[in-house]
Length: 418
Image (cartoon, rainbow, N blue to C red):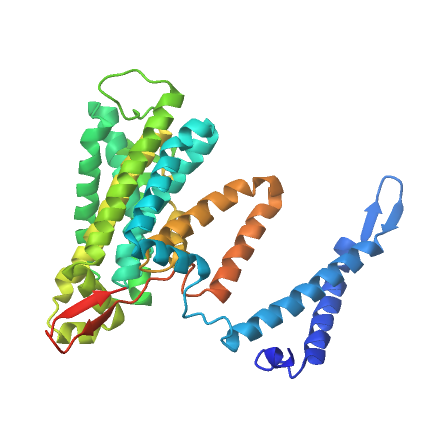
């Protein structure tokens, strides 16, 4: 076991224990006034809570020791980061067998169909939000995960779709189903408009420009009060209709849930087809090496613009759904935090991986909701989970599989498999 600590800055277990003990002593010393001393100003008494110091010292010692051990394991590649996790292997096995694949799809479809009938309205609302973020994550996955273009202003397309529906519904009473494709078209157009000025940019510079673009859209929405109603926002946005039927809030929520299920299936199908198409391979080539991509004859301008436009299309549609679900929007719903959250879904789930993005959205959206019992500690736990994933699974929870092309000598034809 001692060799586990050799590459983590320790020569032996004894040194690891010594360093962990030192960290525990320092932490106990620094938190001493907060955790040990309690002053009662009414009765003029001081209570010494030495047991708190003991608890925190033991916890820090164990945490530090385990952290060093895990880091050493990672550095020695005992975890074999490049290999699939057991869950990813299971998914791959199911996907490669047609019978298992269709059985699993049937079970998932059954569970998804029964979900609003089994769980209450609150749980259904949470799941709708999760589905919206999955669609957003899959859209951004085209730009960041496949094409390798770091976009920090993705929320701008989301906002445009939401405000397009809200304004058209408020002024001209235009319905949800009519605005859904229009929101997608507006997202596409805006994606192209953003794509042109940043064609020559990449990396940090591209991130800064897209971040500025997202902030410009938010500031316009906030300050153009005559049109967007400013910080007050727009309320009483119509929910989706179904052949003129009158629905209660509960019925509308369930209806919205099934709409999101349909939109998610469409998104997964489209992104999967794009990923395996000619343009998908061009995006992957652009992500790996832009210069080599150009040398192979791939049109860089067209490839980048398509990535921005198609990625923004899903954000526009998700924005329309968001406005119809909440029936109220304002600029506070489209801050940089939303872009950061969508980007985190893609990065933590696994860039370029559809399964990873779905897993990332479920964890990042549902975990904070179900940690509400921990009150003020829930965001601390949420942050700790994100740090652990980034340290020990930097490639994401379910990373994308690289395609391997094999050629047989008999017919010279190539076959690609995952």
